[in-house]
Length: 80
Ligand code: SF4
Ligand code: SF4
Picture (cartoon, helix red, strand yellow):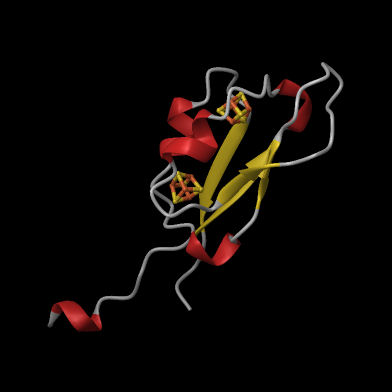
């Protein structure tokens, strides 16, 4: 198999907005710029992130690992 035949791994991101403290780590460190900070306020008065470009997620789970509030869960999507 050549590298060009390998399909990209895709993921989907779920955010528990009310656990977020608005640090922005997940937005800043996502390697494919999936997330952005929203304009809305959560129950604590912070701006949680939202999934801006869902098709860019590669299921690396870095946002999930780096979130200090455990507010993100990433799930691998089935291959297309
Ligand atoms: S799993 Fe990886 S690619 Fe997907 S949003 Fe999180 S950091 Fe970005
Ligand atoms: S890393 Fe967690 S706490 Fe920080 S902005 Fe992202 S979801 Fe919120």
